[in-house]
Amino acid sequence: MFDCRLAKDVIYPLPTSVESSSNVLECLYIPYNIDFEFVGPWTLDKRQLVRSFYHTVVANLPVSTFFPSKSKQSRFIIVLLNGSSNDDNDGHHHSYNKYTIPTKENEQYKLYVDKEQVRMMVYSHLGAMNAIKTLVQVVYANKEHAICVIYLPLVIKDSPSIEYRGLLLDTEFIKSLIRGMNISNEQTYTVIGQILSTLGRLFPDPYIHLGGDEVSVECWLEDKELVARMAQKGIHSGDQYMPYFLDRLLDIANKTLPPSKQLIFWEDSFVDLFLLQHGQYQKILHPNSTSTSTSPVYNSNNIIYQVWKGGETIGEYLRDQEIIYSFGFYMDPSFQSCKSFEDCYSRFVPTNISNLLGVEGCAWEMTQPSSNCTEKDLTVVERGFNDRVWFRLIAMSENLWSHDQIPKLTNNNNNNNAKDRAHSFTKQILSKQLSKSMLFDNNSNNPQTTIDRILNHIKKTK
Image (cartoon, helix red, strand yellow):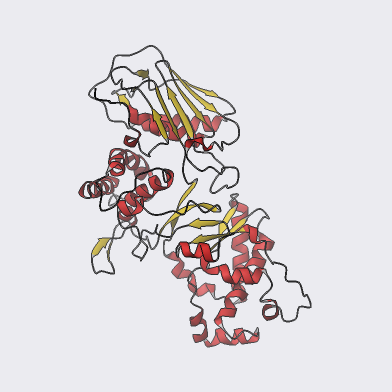
């Protein structure tokens, strides 16, 4: 007999486990205005957030041509569990207690549905929202926005393979500030101190990124004024001037940021920071100091490095450092870009690294809603943020959420499950989120155009 039980590979993102029957004719009827039963230490604002999210998602569901007859009154129970789960039986690696990028929220959930009730077991409002996004993929909906959950009894469990998944944006406005970033000018350090003090006060999260990548120290020697100031400090090479800047920067960070704030630097700065922290530049940077101490000027445990050059760096330098991994997850034209859905979906992530905090995709120079760009191979492509980032970000998100178990797409196989999931759920996601976004601040920026381009791209590559 044909088995029509729910297959987990039709759900987006791919869940850890699915157990269900094959019954699609009977269902649990849930009216649109059902009263949620919140069990556990829910705050009022989190209850309202979950309730609003449910109504928004359900209101956007397409009306089904088939809708079973109403069943008896159902219950919708959302249980907030205390603490964090480190249950390794679900096949994922959890480290919610150890790492806190970007929040301390636990996103995992367990969803149970039978003929009488929906029960969600979660550790945060994010877990409840993830469970709702999964639930609406196994329902019929009517024009009153009521839903009927099928495949009863149904049990779905899920959690992210990689807890922190982010997007690093560069809007290119930094170029207008370069003139004011002369590191030989004392005013620069005054401004840095004011900025860090303000950021530390306004943003309570425990992280701040201080950059430090691709610094061209050779160009400093082409500036006569800068060379003269270097000479005044007893510095005669750009390789020594970068540690000077980092030394000043760390000193300012020490004095202006809360002690709990962790610093993030690009991996390029590791060698200078390591030597700086162990007193190797003491005589050059502080020639008049009588101290012979080689103790670190800044606690190295408070520094996280963002890797963009590849896994070799991790083995050579960063074995004992906490890292954020970005190699291969760039969305601009570069040697390590993921240039298609398949590329982003199948990118390697070094999950065997014990100190991996998470992964950030990177989108550089995204200044225009829509624009053309000539690539290195002379092909002309759309480079605007709206047209370039979203479908790749969706592929990256599923890769990182389900990284431990998803079948990887390659050019040599026909496994299109990931694109099928993205195709069925992408339009709903983007139509809700992009239409409300400040990315579309005038009539020329139509979110439907972006959605159509993404869906057409997925269809063409199937």
